[in-house]
Image (tube, rainbow, N blue to C red; front, side):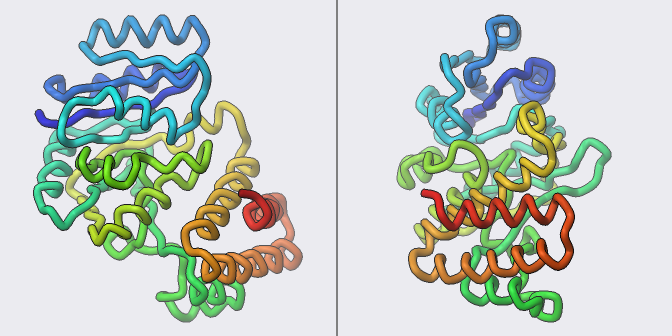
Length: 283
């Protein structure tokens, strides 16, 4: 099978083992150990020896983008899949994703993502523009679906990427996974770069994977901290990618989340508001 699958892991043998063993044995499988402790590293290395996967270790946690790029540099095949370690791939999914990459107009292919209960958790959205930012701030997005940031996978500007297939040539042309962020927003940045080259994103619902959402993040942080960090990186990426228009859009969006935090209160909304403010001020 002409595909290299890069599985990025940190401090998690069990889920990584389940992920690797769900992958086709004729794929090139590269497990990137992103600075795990010695005991887990030894278990990962032994699992790779058993399954024929290639073990690549970083002595420190490089973050998502740098860890993925490290794995890609060790790949040898013409197509690459970037995979979280908390993914289990259902039979036939990879073949269906790779088939969509045969279309030269497609830059990346994304599967349907189910949670561990079987519920569809495929996430997609629109890039933050002045219109969507104002729609969120004013509440008009409730009345006008085109002003909503959340989208269906079929019509999204970006899709969440716990498991994404891309040609190695395309990945090289866009400079790999954008390393501007340590964790979160990498999929938004990846989709932006692919679309900037005039390529489409393909959602392939017949290709199905199961994902334990935020498994690595939950080792470190609670739900509110995850929301804060996700919002911060979403705002930061939107500002950096879209220039002055992005700054206006993010300002409108931030006004909206601040208003909701004041009016609605609650720790979840306050966490999102803090993240938005941080995203407006950090680089």
